[in-house]
View 1 (cartoon, rainbow, N blue to C red):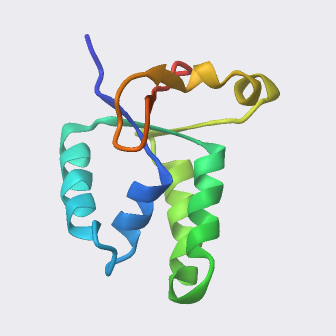
View 2 (view 1 turned 60 degrees about the vertical axis):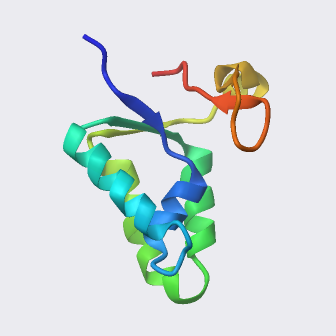
View 3 (view 1 turned 180 degrees about the vertical axis):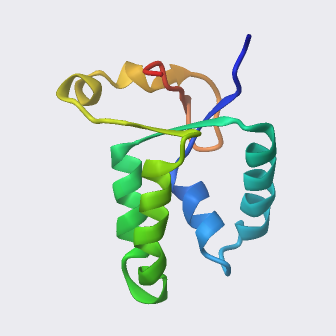
Length: 111
């Protein structure tokens, strides 16, 4: 049985959390779809830290802690721990393929 999985990145998380973000409505729509389909979400500790850092300043500060707690406790979300091996081997996350920003796409082989 094939399980749907997606990699959660910082930009999507920020768009979902920040109501005046240009991509907020689309992020909310995608979030609902992921939740309804019970899609497994994969991210890394580095992404969780980036999200927390980005939200820790200004008016989003109160939400930062709650978002980090949810990412770490939600059963459908897997947060991959960083290790020297993982950091030293980018091929664990990068696979050839087109993206909007370059020639690599993010893929997790750790789960």
